Image 1 (cartoon, rainbow over the protein chains, first blue to last red):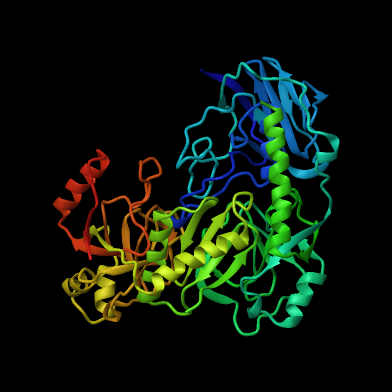
Image 2: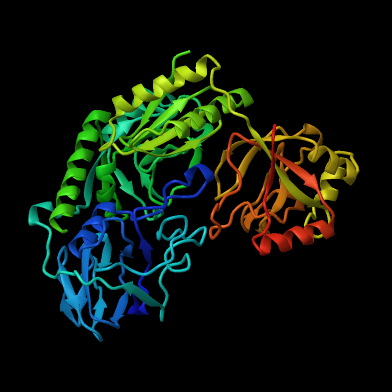
Length: 315
Length: 240
C-alpha cells in the first residue's frame, strides 16, 4: 500500500532520491548516478529493516524541512547536518519513529556534507531502467528526474516489521575529517605523466575547490605534468577515476560522472574511500596514498562482510 | 598477441585491443563482449566498450582481480584464432533531410560545392560503424563518414537541438538522442527515438554494430512519428 509520507515544506539546497545507482546501461551512455556515500545509504536502510539498495533521500549541506503526514520509522545517517524533529535534536545512525504532524529539519553542517534519510518500507517511486537514482542532467529517476521542490508529496510503502532503536555500533560510525587520505590504484595512464608528476601526486596536499559536485571533485595543488599530451582516445571512466586535463589539476570522478572521457587518468580512488570523499567539503585537503589492487580488494571484502553481517542481524 | 590490461581501481579492469581507431579493433571488442554475454562470469556487473578498449566492472567480493584476469585471458584466446565470429547488424535510421528540421543541409552542400541531393545521397549510402556509445544516453559515436561532406561545427552552438536531429561535425556524423545544446550542422531529423527512458528497451543501438541513414519523405516521417508515438514502431535491422 502506498501512502503519503512527507510533505516538502522547504526543499533544501539539493535533496534527491538515490539508491545504489543505475548499473547495466553504461554501455549505452547512461550515467550510473546513485548515492555519493553508498555506505551511509546502505546503513540507513539496514537500520529501518529495508533492503540495502532501497532508495533514500540524499540531503546536501543545507537540509530540507519535511512535514510528516503519517507515522513512520526513519533513520538518518552520513554527514551530521544537525537534524531535528519538532525542534529537538534527532538521533543519527539509529532508527526512530516520527509522528504525523511533526517536522523533520536540518541546521548547521557539523561534520560531513551529505545526510541520508531512509524510511521503513521504502519510498514509493517508479523505477527508471531498474533504478530510483536521480540523474539531474538527463532528468531521469527519483521524483520526476529532479531535486525535491516545495510542496512535493513523498510517498512511502508500508512496512509492518519496522523496528525503532536499532543503531550502528559506535566503532563503525565513520568520522568525517577536513583532511582525507584517499587510497588509489595507479593508472591506467600513469605512463603519460612525468616521474615528478607521480611523485607530486603521491606526496602533496590537494584542496577540494568549490567547483565540485556530484559529477566530480576538482582539486587544486601542485601541477601534474604530462610527458606529451593530456588527451587519450575516449574510453570508459570508472567511479573514483582521477583525470588530469592539460592544466595539470586533478578531477576525481564521482557518482554522476559521464560514462566515457578523453583525458588521461593518473589513478583510481578505491571503492571503500569514496564515501569519505563524498563527505568532504570544498576546502578540505586530500592526500593520495598508493595501494595494490589486492590490498584494496581486501578492504572491499571487509566492508562487504560488515554489511552482510548487519544485513543478517537486521532480518 | 598477449592481452594487454590495466586495473581500474579495485572494481574495474580495462582490456586494450589496439592503439588506434580501426574497424578491426572495434570488431574484436564486440566479439569479446558477445563471448562475455554467452559465458557470463560471476561477479561482473557491466562493461563499457570504447574505441580501443573494453572496461569491465565487477564486485571484488564475488571475484578477485587475478581470478577474473585468468578467465578473461582464456576468453581472449578464443578470439585470437578467429574462431569466434558474430554477425553484425545494420540498423536503419529513417531520416527526413532538409526542411525546417534540417536547417544546415544547404550550408553543408555549399561548403562542399555539392547540391543538397548530393549531400543526402552521400550521407545515406554508408554503413557507419557505431564505435562507442556515450556523451549522453543513447548517443552513437559513428565512424566512416566520407570527407566529401565534412563540415566544421557551427561558430555559435544552438542552445537547443531537437531529439532525433542528424548532424555533421567535422568528419563525424551523429544523431542527438535527446534535446541538448549543440554545435553540429543539422541536416535532417529521424522520427525514431534512439533513447526513451520509459521504453522496455530504453536504447535502440549497440556499439560494434552499424547504422545507415535511409532518406524518407515528410509524409513517411509523419507516419513513422505516429507509429513511434503509439509504441508500434520497430527499428529495422539487417545482417551486414
